[in-house]
Length: 340
Image (spheres, rainbow, N blue to C red):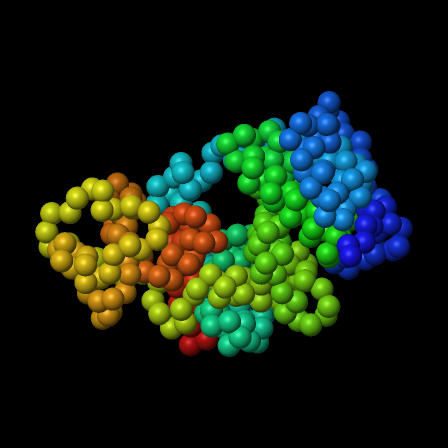
């Protein structure tokens, strides 16, 4: 049997989350938006009520959510769709971020090694994800998560269904983790913590990696490390296998072969039959997708292998996956050089 517990009860029982005592939320909004009265909110309120939530409290939270015009502007211009590879790479492959990655790895070397042993995901990939996402916790987002998810769920029709689903997951998250719903902040898309998990990812993959009884990806880098590793493991990371390989083109290639989806659909043997091969010593049954990326007016070519595809499960962009991979290699090289 599910027990209803109001948000007010969570607050007045003196819950402490992420090391901070929680205060009662301010439900006032500065504009006329009242998401509790939005027509599409009624289904969410009904569903959560049927699943054990106090409907009045759900309405209070939605009424306190604020529409953020800057969120709608940001989601309409994602970097992955307006930058080429060279421009995108320049954001993430700077010396400062690489050095920060080395420092993060050195500080949490034992935890990263344990994550690699537990989940089979290389430490450098975990480090690179956290570096690309938040510069190692330096930029985890400033929007209230409930504002971001409500704005996108109710005022962004293109993906409203998805974000209303995440808003529903968020109600479960704050109940399960005993978090005051207005306390958490994240990105304009409602992603949270060091690794920028959306609510459904948090509920599915976040772990208490340091054993303190809390899954805290906002203030605890150890939990974030374990959670990122768990995410990659659950999405099929193959330990010890490569991420990408070089490309040798010996026959005329058709334009539609390049950047044709993220999931590898042809094996290296099949690509070889088309006159496209790799210098790397890889088995012919490795599945690969053919990529062409522009940088400084020139095109560069690679095969994205299975583990490259796994990285795109974190963010559905080949530019993103390439940035993660190259940052991981840069951090490894810099760390090795400093150790030498």
